Amino acid sequence: MTSQPVAAPVAYGWREPFSNEEVNALHAEAFGHQPVDDDWNDRVARLSLGWVAARDDAGLVGFVNVLWDGLAHAFVVDTSVALRARRQGIGAGLVEVARDHAAAAGCEWLHVDFDEELREFYLDACGFAPTSAGLVRLRP
Ligand SMILES: CC(C)(COP(=O)(O)OP(=O)(O)OC[C@H]1O[C@@H](n2cnc3c(N)ncnc32)[C@H](O)[C@@H]1OP(=O)(O)O)[C@@H](O)C(=O)NCCC(=O)NCCS
Image (cartoon, rainbow, N blue to C red; front, side, top):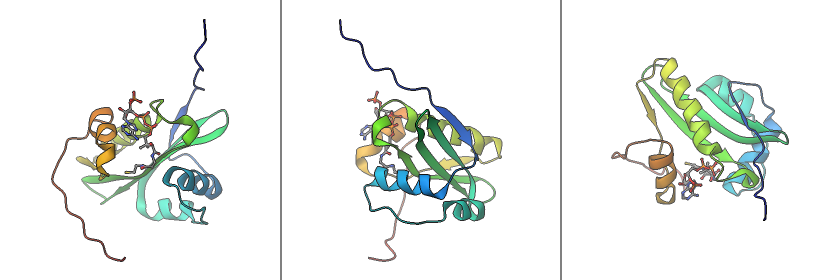
């Protein structure tokens, strides 16, 4: 009999401290770009309702940023899960914590936009309803 690998326990933290280095590394891995030196701590302090960080024994495995309009609308952006921890429910877990905290902050709506390939993730696993939306590219 072969045994299946057991996923390490994951803890989700709302607005918990993180280092710019670990979020930059996770974002580059998740979105497949070269590492950059963004100041995520400054960014979320100025612009976000909050964020969710997911950690296992080895470090940061997931992150989502939650922007808002200060009133009714919150927006999840940059949902990221490390390659080594994909398809274990961590992405859906990040969004669930974001949703709970946006609701607790008094928001009425949680928004997301995504590429077609992630319909199953956002609509089925995370519970978003499909809607019409518009988008304009502002720079090439
Ligand atoms: C999208 C992302 C956050 C999903 O994270 P994850 O932890 O692997 O997702 P979950 O394990 O919670 O997935 C739950 C369900 O969503 C669906 N799903 C998840 N990723 C999917 C994918 N890439 N394609 C199709 N369906 C997917 C599946 O139904 C999955 O359940 P299953 O594993 O039992 O089949 C992760 O793949 C990622 O970081 N991608 C790169 C960055 C990105 O594109 N982020 C989204 C920006 S809008």
